[in-house]
Image 1 (cartoon, rainbow, N blue to C red):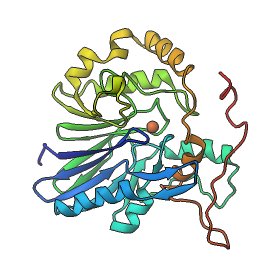
Image 2 (image 1 turned 90 degrees about the horizontal axis):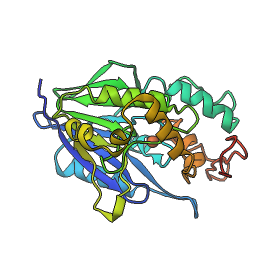
Image 3 (image 1 turned 180 degrees about the vertical axis):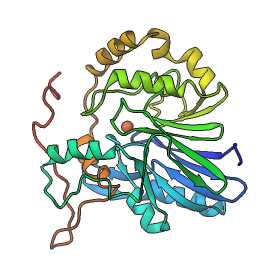
Length: 294
Ligand SMILES: [Fe+2]
């Protein structure tokens, strides 16, 4: 099996998300990871520019899409998984524990029995250690909860897609205060990622360009161990939980969280249209005790 996937990152500047194409150079097969559906909350407008740019890349490179993967139900952007499935016919994938996230948010949104909290919105659910293939590349799921209950890291050869665990070393780590989040679990997930070989290429899920530097998304296990600012500041679980908790208490909820999760727990599908053909998102009020007035 090949062990050097070709990885292309696409930075989405509005939300600081990194979308990836993981390709097998031998077979020209690929997977799309964490694609963004463009959304402007002020106007309610959606667009597919980011996803279409990925499809352009796929076409230009002569690739064929085998999988569309979300590493976790995102709180900061809408997933384009549903759109890309419609465009490519490729099956969608996420972590098996998404079912637990669906249960939490189904209650928050007051969804009825027409919304099954059983993961059936995806074609494939990956539990810890499950493998899929992209051409001749193996891709293994590593359960990495903390930021969400369901987050999975995808390990393929010398590359790992680590989503919202570690950011670039100068940015530290992801927050762990959303419903189902857990700073101690995040610490242990980061510990698992850092057991990968030193030279493993780590591809993060977000970059917010601290100090106005250019967007960046690739590091290595060795670099993270040596220079990640949160791992430098907190060297054991208790210290990390204290650091993470204190920092999270200063952060507002992501602007799109309540709008995005209802789409993302539905496999990146917008709600069905009404009789007029219009789609509506729900905005639950006072659903997050303690949030909003920090
Ligand atoms: Fe996230």
